[in-house]
Length: 238
Image (cartoon, rainbow, N blue to C red):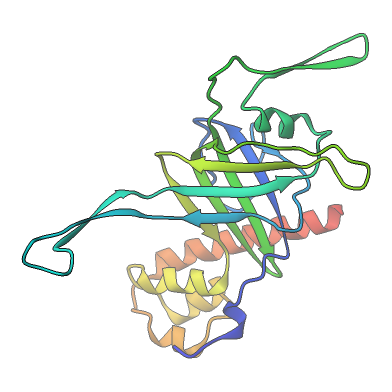
């Protein structure tokens, strides 16, 4: 397939959401409701999602190259910097839990007990013009230190590094190329259905379709219509 500039994704804006461990991950791009919490402004460095792989080579006397390579770990991390120190949910995440109590108009933060775990479900949402990407993680926990500088010439920042733990993760998007690829890989579809689901599909994509993927693409069409309606609703509310 020839290079296509419309497939270049720029995350021009986004949001970071957290919820208690065990919260079901979203399956659509509909607005997230409680118990999901928006953590507010993130620095202009955005969010960095890193996937790694640790390996160990098994070497043999008779070979200069490894005879086998074992995968010992596949760590994943999420890194971002929160700017709203005045947002209680951000501070609680940074300190691995704790509680905020109010008395006589004064709020008091009580940190968690030493060694406490605070595992969260996490959603990173990034938008690029008419496409939205959601990176969804069922279990993540604060990994590195959180160092905040209190100075007069900058915001009090909360640098967050989350380690993704054993569980599920996925990416949800309405990007036309992804939807088209899913339709092509599905159990058939018609060209007309793909056009209804993905108006920007290319002629080359249509040629790759089998005849019987009608059901899958119609589902994609309904999801696309719901997403666009939700996006229009959000835009009207601004």
